Length: 307
Image (tube, rainbow, N blue to C red; front, side, top):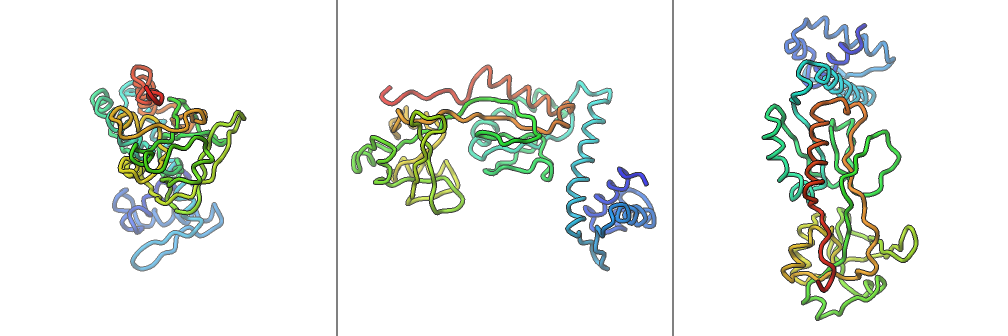
């Protein structure tokens, strides 16, 4: 059995929804499609598909194989492209995952020039505030903020990001200015999260890891944009990336707080699988972002309070 060919047939059958549809799209005979899938099931010693008169259903084992096989087949295409005559002309589609706010305000504006530079490339920009599974979701590149866990992924550092605490002048005039992180217990805090409950903000205290302060916010949102808008209207104290608040500082809409307790900046990385390193389109995108960051850092430090 040609395992790679059989996996391609299996993936095609799942995507098409039936063995007959897969046979027509390959093209191949229904007998050949059935035989290859049966050979896969015999090889792995488990049922992969549940066949009905109308459709196919994946078993748990079948779903694992489908996700992995799809990733393997995608990597094979990358290898073929890297070894082809056109390896110096990146082409195809590249899938990039980014935190929502950063993707919308920072990454998206950079894509026009990238697409002009590489007319044979297309980009799918996925805006998600979670850590994606790059293999199962077929993501070529992912932008991640913070310390990275041990992983087989390759990381390319782009910048350092600083989280700051700020509030509107009207709120501070009414409720007072917090002098220490502990004072936040007496203030209305605006929290970025998908699940209301309790949260922790980290502040510097002279130690390596810093100090965590438990925050019980009155307003929770899963959008940093919306939180900043609420803060501008005096809803409370918010914690946002420094680059997001630059315009509000300049306009006097927000005031930066607790500057002596700001934690060390968090690294921003561009992540990709080692197997993608040979892909011309992945290299092109990585090199492009690094080039743009070196020329104009979109996360330049904001002015300190009072400046």
